[in-house]
Image 1 (cartoon, rainbow, N blue to C red):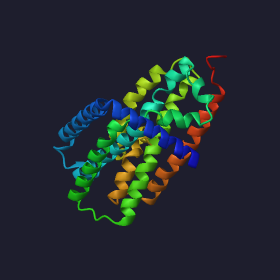
Image 2: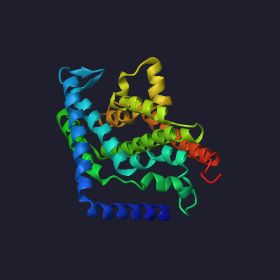
Image 3: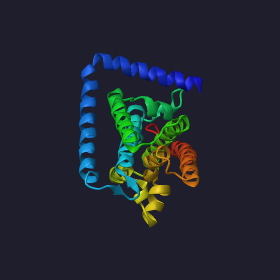
Image 4: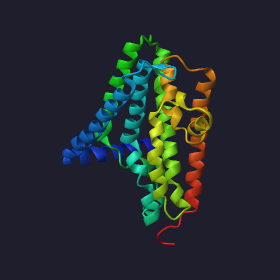
Length: 262
């Protein structure tokens, strides 16, 4: 574990050194992501600004929800998204060979070699939005509620990573995964829809098969004290289940990888 953390720290320092040389890349990424963040706020303001309740959630809970999925997305963009997003191309081109032959976990390097520091300000903006939602909701914060919320955000960020990686390991077994990743772009819209709105077969799909529906919903329910013990246990359990499955699928995919030299 210590060796892996040291390796991630080295990758971070290399990225920071590169950023100091090309500083405009930082501000360019922040500008683009910041504009997208503001567009999302405007869209959700137009949708939710004219109603008092969405399902059984009030406007304050919706603000917390928007801030929560923005926070999870921003953390993911900073840490691992741009790394694992290149996995299908590396599998197809045979570039994955360079990772499998190094004395470090290939998945660790793939995940953290493209850390995006330009998305860090979005984490701050998301936290400000969450704080605003809490302030107008009248929620009384305690150490347990804040600590539990932070833990759940971390767990849901891991779940987001799991789902993203599962989808990007499909090219291990098929000729091309381009169509699948395009479908994923549409499915990710469900990440921005409160899970409380899903009913019937949609709840089965987006709570278990592709659990985008719980990623921002469970932390929001926890901080607003509207979550049941069963819902909390389910949220934690699905993260553990998907993480175990993701690790197994990655190893299984690597064992079936046809390298460029084969």
